[in-house]
Image 1 (cartoon, one colour):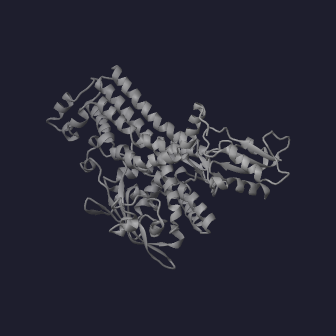
Image 2 (tube, one colour; image 1 turned 30 degrees about the vertical axis):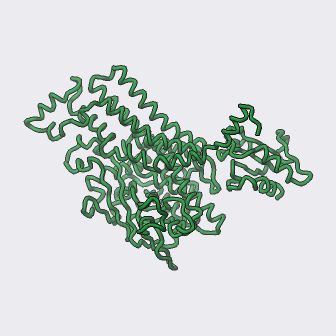
Image 3 (cartoon, each protein chain N blue to C red; image 1 turned 90 degrees about the horizontal axis):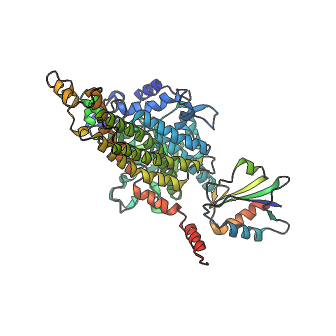
Length: 483
Length: 96
């Protein structure tokens, strides 16, 4: 198969047997659930664009394992050009969906796990890399969406995994036998979890010797017996249940997160990729986080493009587009957005080969990229709200706009420039609302802050990678200080 | 003759000059390092890059020697090596 059609992707999800809870009820049909469906559409777009000759150069790659054409989300980066194309693909998808398209975590996970299992096997004589490659072949052949699952609930942050009052607050092994291992715990904030075919679980942080049971990586079918998903709420999510379109802001696309609970989940040895090798857990976290911090230089720039466009259209509809301060604010938004993208491209262009042959981004620049992402989307959102005006949060509902009696009042008094219908004005203002404080703000704002690691995590990496000693030597040389 | 090729040195994580001096001392008599462009490719070469980007690791550079030992910041042939042991590891690889 190698490339699934979007229809085949949707059908493949329908065949899965997820155990999902949303607002206190078990969801039998997630694909058609009005709250979940838009997020499925976003992932589906990764399959749609891969079929389109206009986008295949970014959306597809040639497998280094089989030589076949595959979706780039299933690819191991074989060059810095691959790393650059990844960021461009993510920008494209952000532009096409105006939301999180969820499939990056799996791509970032396979690239990190590849090089780390290779190096682990070389040093320790383990057999994890062969198992991983076997899984990767299946992933590429069946064009699977894989959820890379890293973040544990973590409980009391001042305590290590094994010191927690409840040991399940970090994912850990509770039993090992000849067939495999039994796993308990949970992964939080799992992006795209219920739109995925498989999960690739990784440790949440560098583990110490006493936390060996928590140094764990494995793959499992996303609907395996023993996995329960508790779907996360989003701001304004119930608007999707109202049977309206305009008020949702972005009715077709969205993102989602879920709590993924492992209740004595059995994993056969063939699917285990790390089990107790605590000294490699930190390396895996560092590489996955690095790739994922690179990702944000693409996807957030793409969503930023949509928000900048929405603000500009709102200014047109308000009759304010020619005001110099509006033009200047749009320039500022563009400057910030392109700075995000520039770092994504830079850390890719400065990438390097690892022992397995897979290319890794420049970790310093990837962390600088993500540090900017923790700030700039907030400023872009603030400027969008400034340009849009207060109406984006005081606007009457779509049902009032369509009401037989008061509809005419809404139409009359919410009109902007005469040539634009009130409905069109409402649509663009609702999109700004959606991106800045509605369902898509989960991805564009708070995920920008905490996704792929909170700001402090990047600052630690920047300190480690910043080569301060070299800078000191440079200064001493210029100042004429002899060592 | 052992070929020696440096990257441009904009962001070195290691002291490249000191490392090359240590390697030279560890090589047995008869082994000499050269940065001159060879008429025919060197049998072996040391490509010394200051950081993991290894920007000098390019196809046109690779044609200068038949076999390379790649130093990219703290790594030798993609494997992390403590700085104090780097010269020893490189010298060992050159003599193989």
